[in-house]
Every structure is written in structure tokens, then in C-alpha cells.
Image 1 (tube, rainbow, N blue to C red):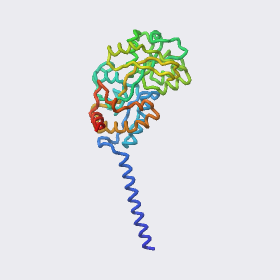
Image 2: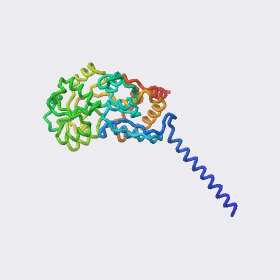
Image 3: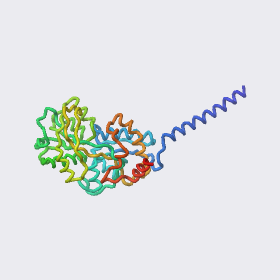
Image 4: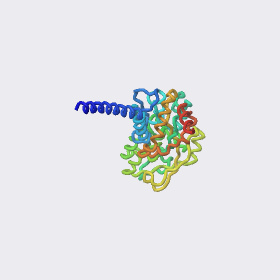
Length: 326
């Protein structure tokens, strides 16, 4: 009996040791992060909760939290300009930003009094200018917005930047428009209640909030004259390209011309290279999973991700992309 008892005790000790090794091994496998990370709470500046930014940011935060064993969350914001300000101030590790707003940020132009110390991590996908009105509205073109109440986007948003430029190209006096400066969620609610005549939005397609709106309140998208795109590029940063909304999107019976602008994931210039490298490893590794809930994530492509000019790639991003060619 004593021999069997001794054997059992020995086996128990071995089993316990194996269990510890398994736990340690699993923990190590889940956390291969660089030493520059710490126990801080990291934020991704991600726009309003009804937009693609927030859906993408939330999914990315979950993925990075799990793969790097860090505390990362997506935070709501006013949009691109706000995101760039938060990132440059160190209030957010990462942020989403339209290419035009990001170009202004590094140049100290437009909404930015001075150049911001931000760098690009990746070009993610293209965003599309939406000018949304109710389907039963008598507004048929951008010129009809004169004298109307139209949200041109929240203050400190990239939407407001592009809305002002589009109206300028269309020779519409922006001061003639009653602009309540609403974010996407509030714009949707105001249009449903007929408190506004329309709203501008810039986002990936489909934008979740607008897709949900179209299910209960039929909408139309106003056409953007393709010659305006050239005008805007000539007057501002050469960041825009002609594009179209496809038939069926938001219940559209026919395609509508619009313009697109690239979207970047950005970080501060001083972010450690290794942290950026870890972010990109997680971003590309989780692309397929994120795309299941955020279709725009499927557009992420290593070959295109490096084209972020005039915003320079962060050195950690340069190192990552060069490593992918080996």
C-alpha cells in the first residue's frame, strides 16, 4: 500500500508540474508582444458608433487585446480631425483618419494650425462621400441644398472637411445652409424625424447606420459631378478619385456617382517601432475574422497598405512591410 501511495503522490506531483508548464506555455503563446508594451489602457480613436470606423476599431481592439494580452478599447470620437488630434496628443495609440484630413494634419493646414506629429500605419480602404436625403424629398442635386437645413458633419470631423470642399466645387454658398453639425447617429435620427433636409457622411460601404436607416426610411444619395473631383484635387490635396455607389446599396435602384478618399490607420511619431510592428502583425493576422463583421476590412492589402502619401509611414511600419518581402 505504501508503494502504491508513493507512486500516486509522485504522479500527482508530475501532473501538477505538467499543468503548470501547459498554463505557462499557453500564456506565452498568447502574449508574444514586444517589451515596449505595458499595462496601460490603450485606445483606438474610432469615430461614431454607427460608422465603419467604430465597428472596425472595436473588432481590432478585441483582436489585439487577445493576441497581445493588452487592455485595448475603441473609443467614440467626432471623426478624422478629432482622431488625429487625440493620436498626436498621446490620448489614443491608434486612430482612423481620412487621407485628406491626415494630409492637412502633417502639413499644418486646414483645421490644423500647426503640423501634427503623426505617421501612417496602413492604408486600409477607401471611403465614399454620401449626401443623404429622404427618397420623397424634392432635393435632386447638390445645388438644391441652398437655403436648406443640412448636417455637414460633426465639428472636428473629416466629414465636415470634405462637405465644405464639395459644396465649394459645386459653387454652393456654405453660409446659406443651416448646419446643425451633427454626427452620423444624430444625423440619422434627425432625418428620420424630418428635422433636417439631408446630411453629409464619409465612410466605407455599406455604412451600418445608413443601411439600417434605409430599411425603415427610404433614402436617396445625391450625385457628385465627376468634374468636381478634379476641381477639389486642384484646390486642395490630391487625395480624391471619382467612384460610384453600386445598384442595390441602401436600396438604390441605380448607381450614383460620388468621390472616394483613402482611409489610414495612424499613430504618433513617437510610438515605439516594435509596438507598431505588433499592431500590424495583429491587424493582418485578424483581417479575415474582422471582415466577417466589417466588410471593409476585407479590402486591406499589404501591397496597397504602404501607399499613404503625403503622410509618411511610421518606421515600425516600414520595418514590418519590408519583412513581408523576405
